[in-house]
Amino acid sequence: MVTRRDTLKIAGAAMVLAAAKTTYAAENTGVTDDKIRIGILGDLTGFAAIWGSGNLSGGTMAFEEINAAGGINGRKLEYISVDSESSAPKGIAGFKRLVDQEKVFAIFGPTSSAVGVPMLRTMAGSGVPIFISAFSSPLATNPPSKNIFRSGTLNDADQGKILANYVTRISSKRSIAIMRQSDEYGKTGAINVVAQLKEIGNVKFIEEQFNASDTDFTSQLLRIRQSDADVLVVYGYPAPSAIVFRQVKQLSLPLQIVGSTATTSRSYAATVGKEAVGARSMFPTKYLPEGADVEIVKFRNAFEVRFPDLARQTRPEATDQMAYHGAKTLIEGLRRAGRDLTRETLIKALEGLKNFETGIANASTFGPDRREGNRSAYVVEVKEGLGRMILPGEYSAI
Image (cartoon, rainbow, N blue to C red; front, side, top):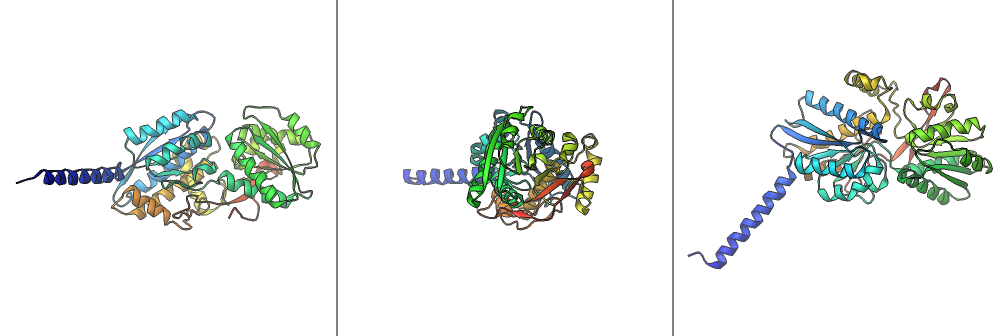
């Protein structure tokens, strides 16, 4: 005879089994016998479109290449792209669409700090593996979230520290001027530059702000002229930074300009014009996208064939390059996770990557408490003729 106690035991066991099945199903969402569904979330339109389009192009190339080679442990990658439109609400909506409706296994993106930072709580709480190749806010990985990884690009905390160390070394007067954008990007970068300057000690600095939409910076630069600064750090998006670079030279200010990684595009020097000669910028790797390194040449040739319209716009850019490296790093994690693929096994596999090289960007290293794949940078300088070169020396934030 089945007693009430037996009935409760059976019901309890069924609930445990059901919960286990639900958890297992969630761990395997987006995985079938022959496919893995990946969401690509990025700003394809709006002010941050350069980063979103790079994330999509670089990811697409890497995913198509692995599929052509037979896939990963018997599975092909199926990717779904969503435009976050340079808008945090659109980014959150796009993320939820990929997770709840498209049922993806993992997400490649988002691509700008303005969109990504407001999404962090949603992303961290989802349990879905997130792989970032573009946006640079340190909040994405500090404190680390179990499911969020970043490779390639340099975060603004590390960049600020490296920038401060570098400009102090090249300043003969130990006097630094900082021009920074007034939004989250510029604020975060400048805070970390200033913090490191204070840590170094015996360094004077002046700080000025500008809006991303500004087109004249004369008043800020004239105030900087009144200081004895001999190095200028510019922490802002490409368009306003280009005008700053130009006006510094037009006003004949005796300043060595050092820009953030936002000012390191292939076409940037041409945008600035002849005034760009001698300007320097932080770059997240020693491999320029127009360089002669073997893997870079192979990547660039393949990119130009796959995306001829972008190639006519002086692409690939660093954003395409970082995304391609990031996607190949994600693919390596999927490969190491094995045929019995779950979100947990992917996370464990990524945590085991040490100095993973692609020849496209700085090697990626992760660990149980490390979600930041790259923590070093190089300096790129614009030469006569508006070509670029990487200066000797690697600079680490560690």
